[in-house]
Length: 168
Image (tube, rainbow, N blue to C red; front, side, top):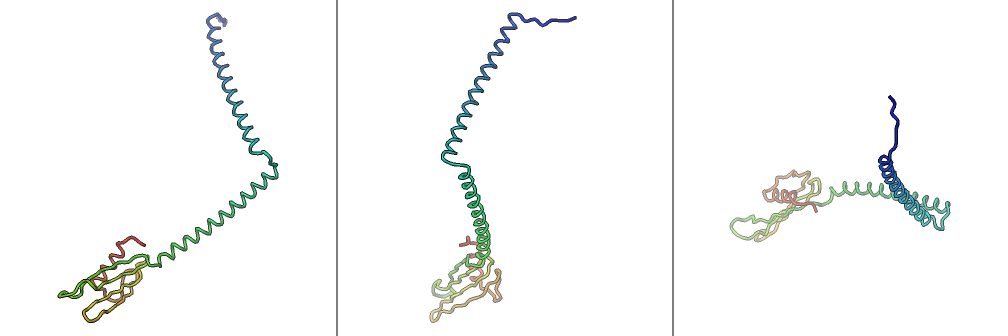
């Protein structure tokens, strides 16, 4: 049994509505495309205004050369920064001061120990012992947090204080 497709008035009305919607949508999209093309043409004319192809090529080459120069500078700065960070560990970074009284019977806290250390905990401890008649100053070398000579309690406290503080 063959059926023939027949258009009646009702089908025609629906078809016209659908075609009208698609037509309106196509018109809106074409207006948007036209607006974008005009905007692009305006930007192009502003960009190329008064310039020739050779001028633009020269500008691009200059920018490329400057970019390469900046890359070389950045590389050199990176190397210098690494060396500076390495060298910084050998500079004085930490210190600790402890005041004390070596005599229990009299006097005040006029004696002191100062620990001066670098990033590797290497440096020295300076101890000043203040007495009634004299003042004595001692130094002890510190290598990686240890001393060849025996450290007093105050000197150990100064080293610990230096390591507990934030680096300078």
